[in-house]
Length: 89
Image (cartoon, rainbow, N blue to C red; front, side):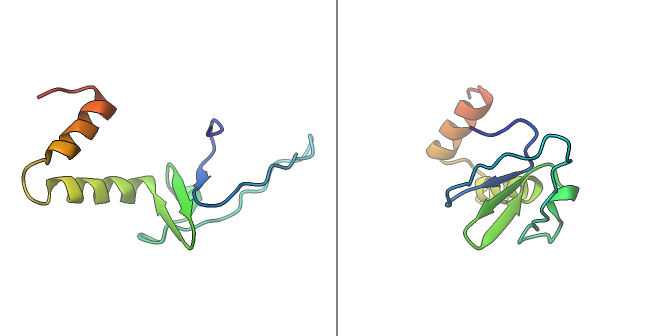
């Protein structure tokens, strides 16, 4: 489950839980999008994978390209869109 407000989500590795001292502000560890190069402090969300990261904005661009590349949605892509956004054609 993603923590509310967490900007970097790791995929493919086990996260280590540790407690922060109560009176200290947690340090923001800089991570960079492998596609646009922006740090996690400049993007809404960042997904961290093994050796690669992608921000939410680059993810949207990639999904838009992959879905719209042929000018028509495949049945599987349409099913996923319907599931995510609750739309029906």
